[in-house]
Amino acid sequence: AKKAPARKTAARKSPAAAAAGSAVAAVAAEVAPEPVVKTSAPVAPPAPAPFPDSPVSPVSQTAAPRQGATVQAVLKCLPELAAGQSLALNVAVQRLREGQLLGRNTSSLKLFSALGPAFELLPADKPSQVRLRR
Image 1 (cartoon, helix red, strand yellow):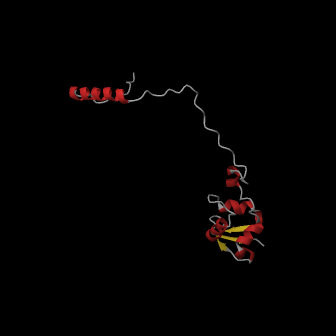
Image 2: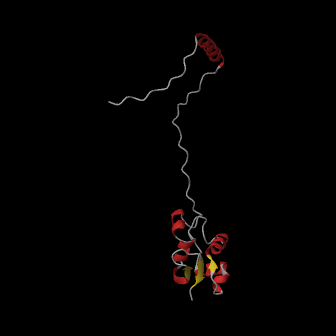
Image 3: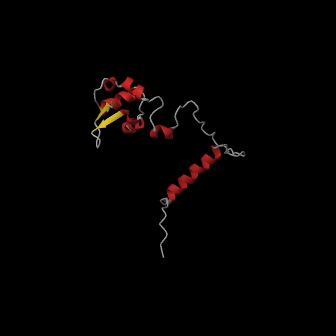
C-alpha cells in the first residue's frame, strides 16, 4: 500500500503571537468595508480575430518560399548569379532576407529547391555555394 504524501502546515504560533494576531484581525474587521459580491456570470474575453491582411498563412510560410519569391526576383536580389558567378550561400541568404524573399526562420535550401532546377547548390552533400544553372 502506498502512503499519502505529507502535507505541509503553517508553523504554530506562540500564545502571545496568537493573541496579538486576533487583536489585529478584530481591528481590521471593524475598519474593512464589506466585500462586493458579483451576481452576473463571468464574461469570456473575445476571440482573437484572424489576420485578413496577411498574404501567406503561417503554416504555408515555413513550407514554401514567400509570396513573390520567383526565379526573377531572386536574380534581381542576387545579380552575381545572373552574371554566371557562384555566390556564398550565407551571403545569398543574408541578401534574400534583406529583400524579404526569405523568412527569418525559413531554410534557404527549401527556397532554392522550391524554385525548381534553376539553381544549383554546391557541394550537394553540404551546400556552401549557390549558382544559376545554364
